[in-house]
Image (cartoon, rainbow, N blue to C red):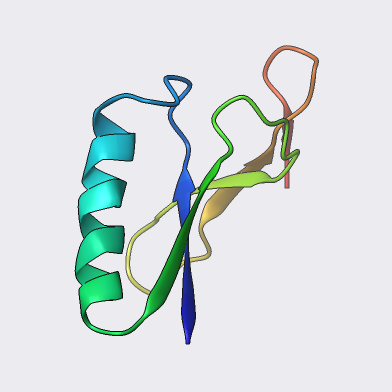
Length: 72
């Protein structure tokens, strides 16, 4: 098994990286391969969703280069 750890922080060697490194070391000690990938500066162009009340659809906004994005 391999676990992919995503570092979304713009600071590639910051606290998030340190925490993920600890997780990766623990996984490795247990025989699980782990890899940290830096995505903090990547433009993934995905959706950002906010949870709503139970049973309701989440509010999602497509990230765009224009101010505000588009409600989906």
